[in-house]
Image (cartoon, rainbow, N blue to C red; front, side, top):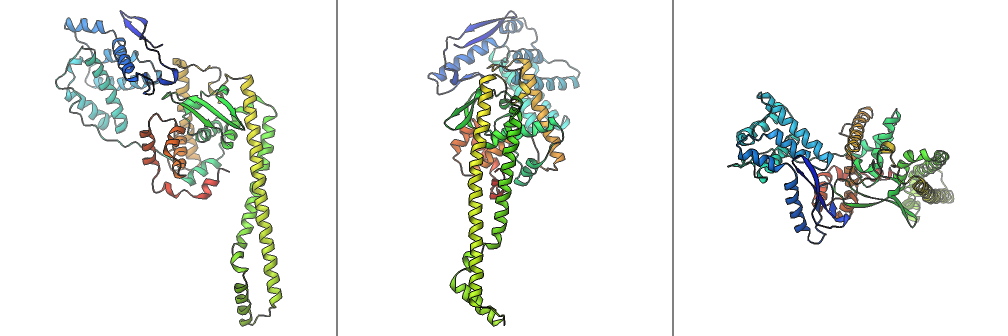
Length: 488
């Protein structure tokens, strides 16, 4: 049952909307009902009306308007933002409002009446952001969008009217959103880089965890609990609701994902670390053997062409013409022995590959079972320990939890920038890039875009299309088979 918070005479009161929706059809972050819910359109209209009524002390401002008292932008904006339910959204809008205050301060003012805002003021503010304050066009557009949102709230509440609308004549700079990825060489370089300090190692591993967990966002992976893990047959999965969109996602835990998670889970088992080292040692040995066999086979890559009667006969006559003392039987015997060695190497390589498959299955089962053991004893612990003891599976995060989550995001990005410099990587690096890399590799593999959209937890296929447009460039199409195999 949906309820909303109404503010009147500076007192908060909960009021029922008399709307009942299934939890999976409700977007907590954006406060709307998904279309799959019957009567979704009607419900969303009712919700918007209620929010408009609840967002501020409307009566107070209407009284001011009747008394012809000035209603100021910053004061009104603070009330609008204070009524926003989501803390992360509130933070970004407060930041934008602070920029407006900075601009007003340059003119020697603390605030400005809403009725004094016109096209010239809006253009001046936008020009200041771009040319004087030197913010990126995308950031300037976001700040202006918040400004416009406050103005529209005032119009909808009936406390101010404009003719024309102050934003009607503003032409914002077009910005193409960039989805950055590392190229194959840089990604391998980052994977092989060994950070010096524990905190660096943790965020380094966290990046690859996110990449292998279907490009999970950092805000979601930090809140994953052991109770989010489940087993189906001989496979292991995580299931969670994306905080940003509310979309429910189930992601298969691959061996790579489990190996990266191991570093965070090993704190629960004394023997876990040794067992993992034994597995890793055996895997390295098998991979080394395979590489050795493949290198030796390079010497025999022409064996199928050479060991044919015509080709052998041609070589025999060539050697004779060169005056070499060679016997036909000796030449045949040499190539028989060569083919025998070739077949032996092929057999050894096949057996090593089979051994690796069995080893990986055993390792996968072991790591998965260890996760399930911890789930039984510590279901509410966060898998990544940073938020442990600060999060208990709440649907709505407190201000303290949101702040802590935000701080870890910032710390992660700062650490990745430091690692980028130390690993001598040219491109940009951020925690969200793990999501882009996951998506790019799926596109290049030829996977169905609908499945990719589901894996990423996009609420709309349009978002996935934007990913494809940005990530599948001509350079991205050159990803090599060797790089694809570098994960194994």
